[in-house]
Image (tube, rainbow, N blue to C red; front, side):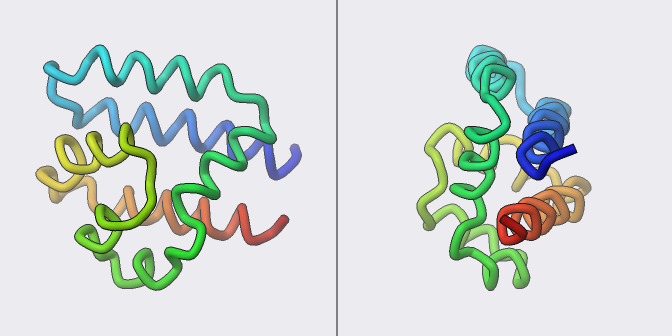
Amino acid sequence: MSVGEVCKQKLQNFVTFIATFTPPIYAHDLAKLTVEVDNLDSLKATFFVAQLVDGKESIIEKRDFTALCDSDIPDNVKVFLNEAIIPNTECHDKFWRYLDLFAKLTNSN
């Protein structure tokens, strides 16, 4: 399995994980994100996860939500971060582990 294929698979898992904590009012936005991710080929999935983590190693290491929200992540991801992830402390560890994995995957290219 290529790095791109792993990125796509883990990105799809990441969206499923986010869905668990997303309030119903954002169901339409979640559906759009799911379709967007499902339609990415492995190269575009790699670029997507790279955009999430590129240059954010210290943010990820410190697990700094404020700095992450202030960084250049896609707006649709910021919505889910603010509405689904940050309010649910029980998912913080897994969220940061996903970002750490994405950083390692994209740095391996």
